[in-house]
Image (cartoon, rainbow, N blue to C red; front, side):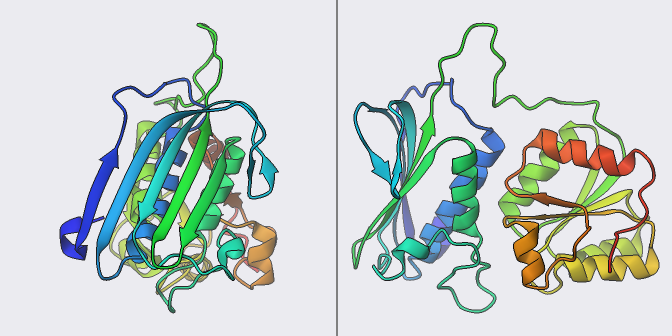
Length: 292
């Protein structure tokens, strides 16, 4: 968030010490934070105050978030607060629904908050929203802490090196996600170059040697993942394509965005899951993108 360009004031309320025995993948936490911050920024087109907070909180009694019980125990609560117009009551229950958005055409896919909700739930956490008309919106993300022994493996650890050395083209329109995934793959030994949409990816392909595999988001501006794969199949029919999305493949199929039988990895995914799928596809030479 470029606060000086948007007329935003950024406040951080971070304690001196935060526990390290947290149950999450740090790459996914950054994805949640980026999505919530971008959502808060977009809620204040005329400027305002964006507050980021982090605090230790203990749940000792009955607590419901979005109708779901929260287990007793220790949590680290991440807060993102804006001073925008707030969320109207009639749509508040729908903000985590996939493809739901109040933004204009070309300004949002409706997957940002749905992706956040999915990541948090997969990490046994909870996400709560409070909003009042004219007073802004506050998102609180409850990340659980865990009792760990000295010999217990770190759930947030990401192995480095040794996964592969092939050339990968990563196509992702979310800047933060693209940077994080590219960095994680490079740590695994892959040679990664990136594109922000299908058109930019085709530009890379036309001027250089094709990669060993393409990892592409499905929903993107200008040229989406499926359109990119179809163009790739015409010129490089044996080039494998791995599709990713914040929504399930069957829902994308219902919208005509993805055909059955394609290689698909649902967001949020771990580095290990992504590398395992890449190795599966690059082990025996994979036969094309499988387009119908």
